[in-house]
Length: 497
Ligand code: PHE
View 1 (cartoon, rainbow, N blue to C red):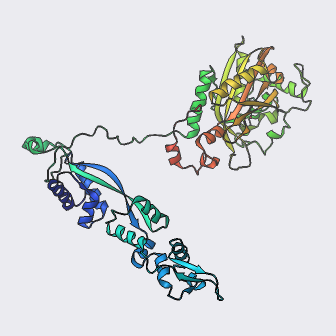
View 2: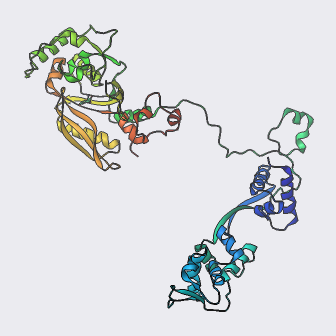
View 3: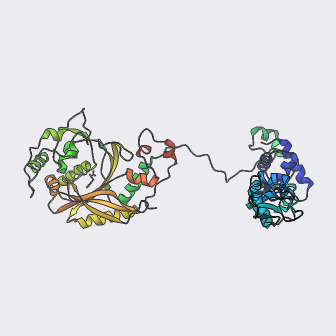
């Protein structure tokens, strides 16, 4: 609350005049900072309709530092003029004066001086007129005194160009009487108390009206991490397309389901220490569907189902090793095996979005864990065309319409395609995912009927999230360096807009 003295002075001033008063004038006459008056205006406004205050802005001209000097000592050209004696002055001498350069050219164009070149010691400058009228100084003095009525805008702009004047904008309030104007300040009550009711004093009080426009205090509540917000959107897209979510609640997986069931050979480089995290306790899994395990072993070591296999000595010890799953395709394998066990085959559309782990070199876009988004469709007679079609539909829902496919390799799909989309911001094609048609060597040992094809694709959740929220370093999104405020402030995610 501003000093009540200033409040009362303002009210008395308004009472005394017909129209209103300007806050700047009040500040000048009281010799206080304008902010003090503004504070008083705000306080008065909070007391109800005592005053009305309208914001105004006005422009006025002020002398610059150089302008003030000019008002005092005369313009550069006038100073040059008065420095030239009757017998003239060498131009080189004149140029050495503080006002020399500017003053010389102005005085020349004013035709106050002339240059005589025919001198041995170089050109000499002479006065051309008896006396001069330094109008620049005159105008500046007028403006300084606030009596600049006969200096027009064009002339002011000219002085501005010479950096002698500047235009400053002044904001102020125009204060007038309000509907409940009074010069006596009574503080409005904000609360009706039991005491006021029993004593009856409420009758004499004035109450502050309710402010129904006021925003409530923001509720303290939990916030979803951006990755979870984007996951919700992807989940929504899959659900719209009729997909069912797979249970992905096991980070630990056996090598059997993560690799072997997917026809990934046991010597495959991705299986070794460098890419996979192995568990030491419990180091192995021992429960596998025995007959299925035999068929997997056979297809790897001897072939079958029309394939010659990899022809190596498949070892159960390798398949038993527990790991942190390296992809959610392990879950897809489990689900397809389960599907094959149900007797009569029914077409399915499955998806999953969950965490996977890889022993990678960490950098700005890679951590040792990330989330995979995976889609799987199983039905009779699905082709690569169906895969491309469904990918178009899926990515269109993300707002990505330009897609390109590049042949690729996965041990478990044939054909395989990397998915590229045109990034409008980066102006180039960027890889957005991987896909393919699962191999018979993977499906037939499971018991999926011949003639059924399974198409699938996968992408990361982090990449679209980083693009969506403009995060360049993954460490700002995941890990101990995450700024919680970023989590609180990131808006909900709409992928298609
Ligand atoms: N599992 C693959 C990966 O880790 C993604 C993928 C899923 C590829 C399904 C083809 C089919 O990148």
